[in-house]
Image 1 (cartoon, rainbow, N blue to C red):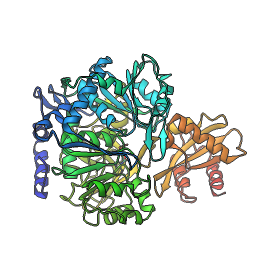
Image 2: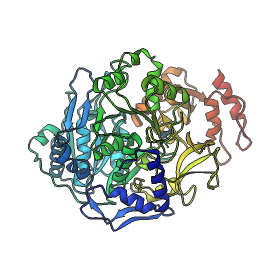
Image 3: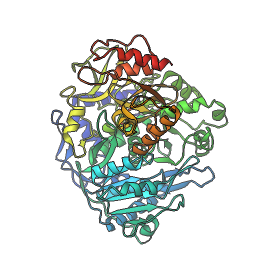
Amino acid sequence: MRIKTLEEYKNQKKKFDDNPEKFWEEKAESFIWHKQWDEVLNWDFNTAKVNWFSGGKLNITENCLDRHLKERSNQIAIKWIANDPNEDNINITYKELHAQVCKFSNVLRKRGVKKGDRVCLYMPMVLELSIAVLACARIGAIHSVVFAGFSAKSLSNRINDAECTVLITSDGGFRGNKVTPLKDISDLAMQKTPSIESCIVLKRTDSEIEMKKDRDFWWHDEMMTADENAPAEIMDSEDELFILYTSGSTGKPKGIVHTTAGYMIYAQYSFQNVFQYNEGDLYWCTADIGWITGHSYIIYGPLLSGAITVMFEGVPTYPDAGRFWEIVEKNKINIFYTAPTAIRALEAKGTGFVRKYDLSSLKVLGTVGEPINEDAWNWYFKEIGGERCPIVDTWWQTETGGIMISNLAGINKAKATFATLPLPGIQACIVDDAGNELKENNIEGKLSIKYPWPSMARTIYGDHKRYIDTYFSAYPGKYFSGDGCYKDEEGLFRITGRVDDVLIVSGHNLGTAEIESAIDEHQNVCESAIVGYPHSIKGNGVYAFIICHEKPSNLQESNKEINDLIVKHVGPIAKVDKFLYIDGLPKTRSGKIMRRILRKIAGGETTNLGDTSTLLDPTVVESIIKESIN
Ligand code: PRX
């Protein structure tokens, strides 16, 4: 049941405080179960073992699709909008989506995919991506979607980490006026992925590609003979639903694991309540399904709720910066959810593009992925929402599975740049460096969560110890988010940004270590350090401090070579914006780079650099500043 009034909101908070397990049990009751759970919750944050609804048996796709067939079989489930404004949209109904998912489930089964097998999806934002995700879930295979902007190396690393047996890709992908050669990239990746047995290829761009005999199969050929009847695999509540990789402070990306029942319950609960979705509303989340936002709020949350979800193949600036607004007008979008980076980029193009379109269908606006600055918030509120639409500033993470801190649209107070309050059922708190909870208002500290929630990640694939170390060891007994947070005089939360070495660039999580190791591949580079600096559109820009064997004679050439390496090893999203060639890095006596100092220099600070006394060689700082000014 959706919370519709402030009074209900308060009641729900109280209900949770009185009996958390009963609170969640009530949320679980509205779903189709093959067998009821034996126990609602079993948890221990010290060992990071959390089980929700143990013993329950279900399949999430029966809850996304089958259960809606009685009432909304001919209602649109997904409205797909092509990159090219002249190409027709596709409206797929719940009945048709169900049939397609069943057919593709049979394709996967025919290719030998069984419950528990891992399937990698490296696809553009086409309808078939949603179909493939749901088909995996239907047969109990664990989907691992890899964002189609990642390089062959990033793709092969992710495939190998999870030992995926099938890769689903397409000949190419359209984004703006670019065609990404996804199959060529997949071919490169598959040279180094021994676990892949078959590759299913969707035809999208008609690009010329190679099809390897007995390994590569066309999607359309496979679907031609597939049956529309596919019984859903019966899953345990805690069976794995998907893996999604996210960058860490150090080392390789982490395969975040989500399981079935808890994720499902929370995806629906948070979707309905945060966005206040009403029957028939057109809801559009502009994220890519390669990220968690696409998983939870393009596919699962909306479909679980029987909503109409819009899926857009293209980019906000193609053919011009009015594209989003043209889509809103043409399709009468009611709920619009995007990232601050997109808002800032479109704001920079001027209001001319906005004012051309009628945006009066909009009722609710949302933002996610990074802190939104006041100016962008105000522009969004005024120019896009006509000062009429509540903005939900939703804080959450790949690891949390669903929105954790946000106002509920139109129900409780919104405040510019504040995510405001944890959803009923979420016990967020701010702690000091020693892990003590700071209960008073008007304080700043680290954002933690002290009680489990159903959609929390269960582990890092293949490395539970890393899961404990990353999230549960900083403040024992609590989940640590890695974010800083301020609580105002009324107790509203404002996320201040990462406090670790994860950089959020245009809303994408990037690990500094990953980028540095790509840069270090350059034959002239000895060592490098990456930090973020304030960037008016991207939120953070990537700033590289680089020590070379020999000072490059042609800086532009060197910069280009380094960025080419980053594109090759990570992907274009991680390209460096600013380069500084230096002679030494500020290191502590134990050899750790003091990024705090580099961050300040990257931000243009040359004086108040804080305590530098623990540096091995404090004079390094002077010389870096000198270089940065030159
Ligand atoms: O730093 C926070 C930021 O994005 C991080 C999570 O990134 P990812 O796992 O890629 O998931 C992004 C989409 C849920 C967080 O640790 N972040 C996310 N939402 C917000 C935010 N920062 C400020 N305000 C937000 N609303």
